[in-house]
Image (cartoon, rainbow over all chains, first blue to last red; front, side, top):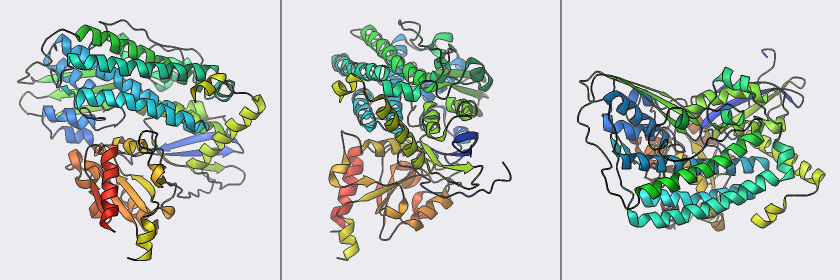
Length: 409
Length: 138
Ligand code: SF4
């Protein structure tokens, strides 16, 4: 690759649709992608170091601000870690409330992904509708926690706020409305011949790849690897309610979408059961924690994108952790593009990268190096455009769309 | 009133810069475009290049790697350009104020006209902030 003359045109370092700065370089031979490179660090805020200067209770708020989409996953894993260290058993009601918040977050995150994926494929209606349905879930959050994002719901030893009985019927009603919409969306996606032509067999990751890269979450489950912390190492209320893990076998982008859509229904199941259990009961929602003893603890949580892992060490005297290590799922998921993008065409790369849902948001720009012409540069917008063009072409070739789309829109 | 300012008030074209944020503020900005808030009704459009922008919406603490980028983007915008700092991070550094990567807050790097605090500010708050500003320049 060295002999290629590198020319980078700064088109949209910040694309409006993408949030977190990441930087991909594609090396191409004609239409075919031969290598991919990734540079990150535009979002580094030094959180692990900051955690060492904050009080145990403040760290919950700090880790919440690692990521806006999974803003409950990190406090969840952090609290699990501290409770593991101090051997705290949290009250049962708190367990249910924790699960409810965790699953609501999965719902909003998956809907957000479906919207973005729709946009990348040229189905802008899907983008708008998915985000519209997502508002319902944000309303539920606002009702329970007082904020649309960054809920500040978790504390060491339990949760901060109760879910009141009089809120439960409204929550359930909103949830069943959202469920109906997701059902329509799912049927439409599975039924649509254009989407099948566009997504099936694209960006395949097989079981081997998943194991080699250590990938987690929906993209592992889409390849038939059944890992899910909620099942493998149950915490909160996940072993008290009935739900099942979704896996599929093909590992292509289509399966990743299907896994995410079907997971939404499992989340709804968990939330409904949890709401039923806490309805009409009373109980503590948190336990007083006075001291964090010396030792180390680990905590895990299945975030929408896979396993989040927090490690905590305390010396028993300081009022803050002396070491806090965080491992987020996208960190292991993103490098899988080496296995999934190489050999594919440029127009598919956009959706393959998006298929990982790399919490990814700000693919600042993508430079494409053409082996022959030496210096051809595409912006991410061009890639989206290419992707949309391909969908249009397939639409024309197939000549029909799913009837369900018409019903839906 | 100067002609440019008058034109500026008609249809705002905004460009979104995320400089070391937790991306929640960014999602709320995107939310403004989707059906519930739909700011395109008022002629507010997100554009793909700073060269077309009347308004820069900046989020995040501006970390050390981003500083040059943010300056570059600001220099590329045609003036007068309104810079809006969105979120506690961009306004003051928020919870990351003491971090070693902190190079901001934003007003240390580029001149800021509007501050919209909140973590993240609700979409309604962002709209209210912009409206207040427009009234101010009348
Ligand atoms: S102000 Fe809050 S929501 Fe916005 S980027 Fe900063 S931490 Fe995230």
